[in-house]
Length: 311
Image 1: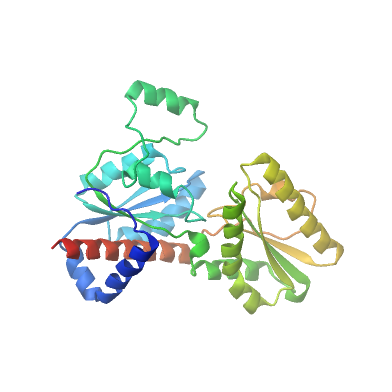
Image 2 (image 1 turned 120 degrees about the vertical axis):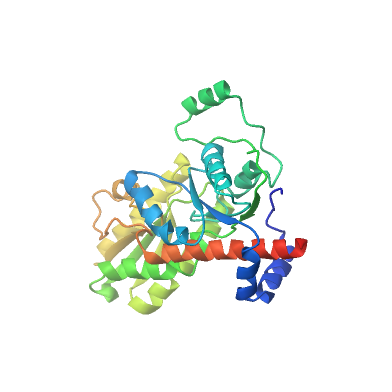
């Protein structure tokens, strides 16, 4: 069975409607007729970074075979995860992409999985070794040869209502005088200006509950646009100017990173400025694991619907 592409928007509507029409008990029954596993894709990082993600994924392992594919949609890690799932008898795979933006490496992932055209064949071993030696971070790009059926998540953490409470709890843990505080939420950000605007809009939505519940003077969202030097320089100036202005007004800035784990480069960006932070990203927090599990459930329901249509 070949890979299954997430459908265009109108088709998605009808697919989701058909999923909703299937009772949960029926989905469970259908799921018993095929072997469903989960591939969790994420950037990955230090041992601490990876351990926090592994802890968030652990409850999912109690229900499904799970393999991790770390990197920026690296074909090597994706292929390793696929082989692991194949060895465990899986034939339908829910691919849960744990990135801030659902747009990140989406098409690239579909191409590597063979869902979309565009990825070349796997290089021969000697060529592959040379390519990997030249990479700062593994980002292999080739089509993986497999018969697994893939159901690929669309949303990112910036779309997830579960993350609202993560942001609220981070700010709450640092707040002592809300009326005289501002929260500064910083994310990595993309290079494309239109995509960056979507990042800002979605992450701002995630801060709405914190704004209503905590009574801070203001919550502002920024992207550092970390991998694009000219845009990063401009973003750094904007972030620093905002924090400096808050300091000059007698307000206490609370800095919260909207990244999966850790504080990233923000300590250097904010060097010599007065602010409060605990260095925590979205992990560790149980809601990240809840979102990952809910995404896997959606993919399983989609697989069940597809299976039902083929019966």
